Amino acid sequence: MTLADDLRWMRSEFRRVRKVSRLRRAAGLTPFSLADARAKKQSDTLVVLGSGRSINRLTDADWQRLDRDYDTLGLNFWMLHPFTPRFYQFEAGPTDDRTRQFEDFLSERAARMASVMMIYKDMERHQLDLTRLPDQTVRSLRVLNKVNLPVETEAGLRRSLTLVRRARLTQATGLLLFARASIVQAASFGAAMGYKRIVLAGVDLNDTRYFWEDDPDLSWFGTAQPGTIHRTMDPTLAGVTVDRVLMVLRDSWLAPEGIELFCGHATSALHPRLPAFFG
Image (cartoon, rainbow, N blue to C red; front, side, top):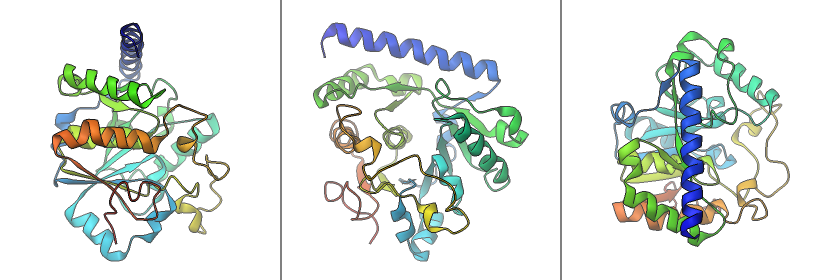
């Protein structure tokens, strides 16, 4: 990236951040606040709960540890799982039908998720119909704003991370970082929250099957990942695949702060580059 590229990227992100703020205000929703999120923090370890099939490898003892010893962040369709996380990050879309189904799931599980901080991302791309949600769910929504990092090359990604670090952007604004997939933003959340260990459970990346496909009551629900290659691991869709993004983030963003990054199980495509947290 050149200086001109940097300036174009920063201008584009500034416009997008302002758009999200306008949409949030128009909808009457509350912005995400790191201070509010930190008030719910109870551990130095954050376990991010992805939807990969390896989640079903967790034992009863693992779930007891998750509930007792660690903070947890569920992603996207995690509310289909019976385990209730402390934080929940999600987005609507990518189609109207998918969004309507998502709204139905949120409504059906509103009581169980009432105590969870609901972090609503990508509002500028796809929006929920708030009239279809229970009032308590709408009140619990926190609209997250972020900075999209360029992912054309690893060198460009490192450069943008350096610029963001020098500007102390997250500390100054509360904006989190996004690059290629929700899991990267989840890791950025963990870093901004001050966790010492971040565990990416259910982030398989070598299997497009989801945990709910093993549940007879939910197997009807389709997947947004056709084929055998996870979209975030397809180099034809973006220059840097999500596994490489995570390694750059680990080396350039997490490690300098003393933050350790783990995958959930050794079956993940991230192993052995990331150590497995669970047995």
